[in-house]
Image 1 (spheres, rainbow, N blue to C red):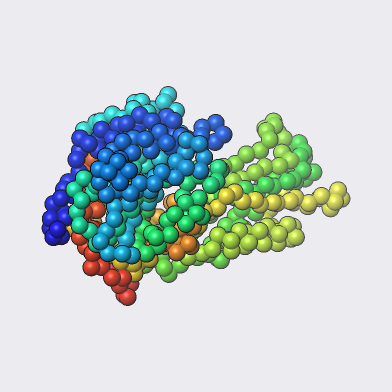
Image 2 (image 1 turned 30 degrees about the horizontal axis):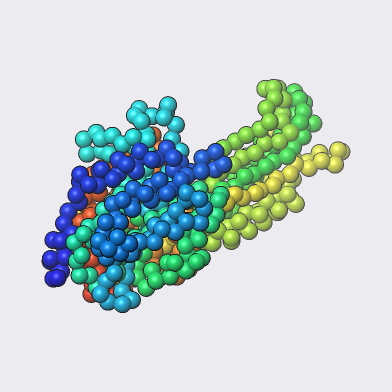
Length: 451
C-alpha cells in the first residue's frame, strides 16, 4: 500500500467512536483514583474497555493482526501492551505513558460531576480527560484503526497503556515492572513517544523536583524577654536566605537551558510554614519551613542534596555568624550552653529529562506537528514527569508530547480537554508514520532553530 494510501486508510479521528470510549473510561475514573492507602486504583476497569475495542482486531480472536498482552503484577491492576507488526524487522516506534489511573477528585469542589463525562461545546469535561484517560482512548482508537484497516507499515507500532503513574508508593505495578521484566526491550530500537503532556507541541525538557523540609530548633520564651529566647522563626528566615543564596551561586542558569527553551532556570523556594502553635506573646521552640527545588535536567539531584546538606552543616557549625534581627536577636545562649539548630531532610525526588534533539523521533514529531498544526515550537518547563528519566537511563529514546488542556494540570477542578487537540493528534500520528519510514537520526542538533 502506498504511503498516501496508508494516510488515507487511517483517516481522521472517528469522533463518535472516540467519545463513546472516553465516556466509558471517565465513568470508571472514580475507581482508578490513586492515593494509597485510602484509594488504590483498579486499572483493569480501564483495561476491559480498551480490550472490548481492540480484541475484535487481534490475533486472540483471529479477527486481525493486533498482538495483545495483558500484564498484571497486582490484582486488578493490569498493564496493556498492544503491537501492530510492521514489515521491516527491528524498525519500531512506540506510544507509551498513557496511564490508566487518575488523581483524586472531590465532587463537592466541582461545578459538574467529575466522574461522568460531559460536553460543553468543544470541551470534554471530567476527571482524566487530559491526565490521562483522554490519551488512553485516543491511542486505543489509533490501534483499533490499524487493526481494522491493516495498512502496510515498515515500522512496528506498539502502544503501552500503563498502571500506577500518579503515585509511586506501591512499586512493582506499572512500567517499572515491565522494564524490569524486559517486556519493553524491543522499544529501545526506535523512538518512544511518552504521551502524557499537554498543549500539542513537543515537550523536550522537564524539571527534576526535590521536596525539602527545614526544621529549626530554638528556645521557647515570653516575647517580652526576647533576649532569653532563641527565636526559631528568625533563625529559619536567615538560614533559608543563606541557603538560597548559596544554591543560586552553585546552580546558576545553565547554557543548555537556552537550547531547550526552558521557561525558568533551576529554582529553590519555600511553599509551606508551620509551628506548634501558642500565644501571640510566646516565642516558639521550633518551626518548620518546607518547599521544593525545581531542577533543570543538566544538574544532578544527588549533587544538589549533598550541597544543601553541606550548607546546613556549615551554618550549624557557625550559627553565630548568621544575620540577626535587631539588638537582642541571637541564635546562641552561652550561659545556658544552648545553640539554635537547623536540620534539613528530603522527600522522594524526581530527576528531569532533556530529550535527545538529534533523535529521528524528535525530528519526525516536529515535522508532523508543523504540517498539521501550522507551526512547531518545542518547549521545556520545570514541571516534573515521573518515570521517564528512568526510561531514558535504561536506554530508551524518550520523546514527550500530549494533547490535553495544560491548565488541567495546574487547576484540577478545570479538568477538560478539547476534541480539536485530539483530532490534531490523530493526524499527527498518521503523518508520523509516513515521515518515519525513511527517517535517520540527524547528526546536527537543530533545537536552537525553534527558540
